[in-house]
Image (cartoon, rainbow, N blue to C red; front, side):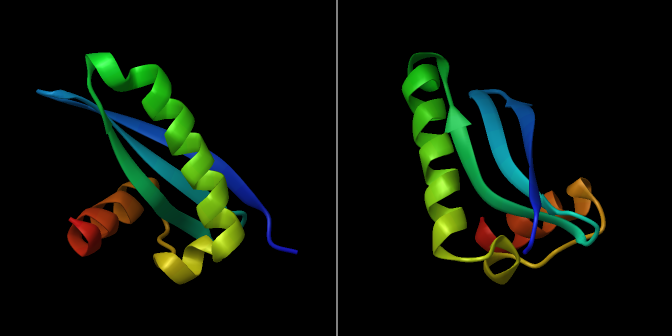
Length: 85
């Protein structure tokens, strides 16, 4: 059984904040499951949707199949930005 740790990572942007939904496959590395943007009017509903999507994606497919594992959170986020932006 694979075990994952949820690691939310926030970034400030000029238009609001960004939430990277990161997961650590324990003992193996980090991956980014999704990236969500929030501005002042969208925060409560947006966070609820982001959490729901995190669970749905985790049920559908192993996170490391969606986006490769990396040794650090910074590397995982950089790879996600490169591959999905």
